[in-house]
Structures are given as C-alpha cells and as structure tokens.
Image (cartoon, rainbow, N blue to C red; front, side, top):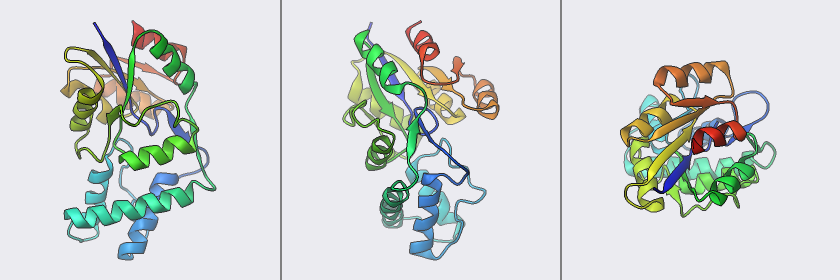
Length: 223
C-alpha cells in the first residue's frame, strides 16, 4: 500500500530565532497597521496552527472591519509583501534535518507533500528563507490558499499527492494538525519543540510525539 507523509510548515519543519513576535506575526501586524491603522493587531491572538484566511478574517473582525473576500485578499497581499521584507533581516531555519528526512522517505518509496495553513506563495517565501524550497514540491500539497479550514487543506493535499486508498500520515506541531488528521483518518505525528507543545499534542491525541525532524520521526513514520 502506498504511503503519503504530509508536513505542516511553521513550528514543524521551520522556526525563527530570537524573541517574539516572529516574522509571520510581525508581518501581519505591519499589514494591519498599513491598511487599517491598527497597532499590534495580533496581540492575544493565537497564530500557531491557524490558516492564513482564518487569521485574516479574525484580525479584521476584531478591528470591526467587514471581513469580505476583497478585504481578506488585500490584507494577505500586504502581509506577504511585509513578510518578504521582514525575512531579509530575520529569517527562518529548519527544525532538525528536514532535507535528510525527506530524502530518506522518498528513497523508501514514500510520497512526501505539504499540508499548511500558509498561502502557497507564503509557503514558498518561508521555505526559501529556511533553505528548504528545493526539498519540497509546491505542486504536491494543500495550502491556505486552497481552503480556510485545515482539514480541507489536508484533503486537498491528499487529492494532489496520493492515489485513492493511500496510508496518510500528518506531521504537525499543534492540536489543529491532530484534529485535521483525525478528520481524514490519518495517523498524526506531532513535533514538539517545547513542553507546552508536547502537552497540547498529547491532550489532542497525537499518535506519537517527537522533538525534531530526525531519526525518531522516521521511525514513527515508517513503523
């Protein structure tokens, strides 16, 4: 039976160094300030595990702005422009040996794709910043530009990447990845870089939890 492994991006295969807010949150804040004059728009808003369209809708709603399709599109376009600028001086880096893990999966006949809440163009920007753009194919995956709900993003990734009946394994770092995996009857392996993340993944019911992309993740995926 064929096997498909779908990787989330933020907090799963890449992260940032230094204090919060990170590059993504910073770019969202700048976009809201530019377009709507709202400062610190993401303060007290959970970004981890969200999807770009859902986050845009939430930020506009908190600011009392109609979150119609045009307003969401404008906000996300501004966010992506700001993200590129932020990453010129504060980039992302991989969590573990991501290229090595992906290469070994492919060598073992496993199909590899992405399932991320990032817009496709945002995923491209972030992967390039972390030196991971050549590791993944953007034609193989589901993105925040495909759907607002994470489970629907995973479904789109499966449609693009795997034949019907394939065994699907979702790799992610939040409860939202676990919930999306459960919605498609996938096995879920969590990546936890903190005790808080480990506790959340455990409570959500992840099938396994690892600290980084490496040998332990390979064992869990190939088990």
